[in-house]
Length: 258
Ligand SMILES: C[S@@+](CC[C@H](N)C(=O)[O-])C[C@H]1O[C@@H](n2cnc3c(N)ncnc32)[C@H](O)[C@@H]1O
Image 1: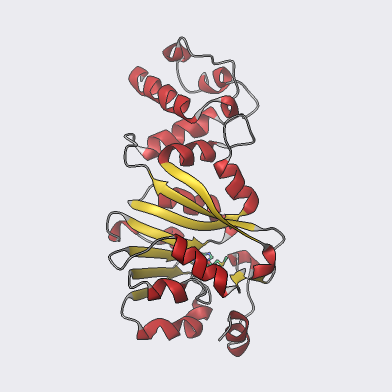
Image 2: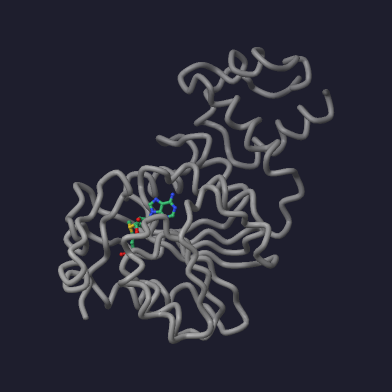
């Protein structure tokens, strides 16, 4: 059955507040799962399975799938997966879901609710994931991948230092019901095994460097640390102008100085 038929059969009206734009194009769902290169030894987290568009293909990989969905109205639609013994569907708010129960190096494949993208990303990056294939709003995805000296945020710097990040697919808004206002992209975030810092500390540091994006690094840093720690560094630049590696260097200095 098609996604729209399931929704009609169970009389479910999709909610904007839960970011419920369901993927209707099965070819795209299949392609996303193929590009995630799942094998049967993997444990895969799906956030927000919705009516199961991606789940259909995830379950066929033979991997162990844990799907976390907040909307219990979708139980009758998702119960069709009960016949598979490699999937567990948990009806819970993902933001309250305990990721520490998943084994190290688990993967994430999800078309996430856009209104909580930042919180979802934070939770994934702070976990023991190895790779995340995520559909996000195009503008958000492009900003996450934005290089130095373009319109980027602290999250672009964190994501690009902590993972090898690239775009896998463009997905236009016509492939969803209801149709969202914006297009989407699918990102591939592969954790860098050699990132040697505490992600929480690095996250806080970079976010403070970007606190006032239009101000210089000097002005941002002096609010929380001794700028003397960064001697020899050109602090007259704005945070968007630095290379990713320069943030690692700044962070090293900051830690050494504390
Ligand atoms: C963009 S839809 C994607 C649905 C489906 N995966 C697809 O591709 O068609 C986002 C899904 O996330 C669910 N969702 C929203 N907030 C959530 C939360 N806090 N925890 C878990 N699921 C959530 C929504 O109910 C919805 O099913």
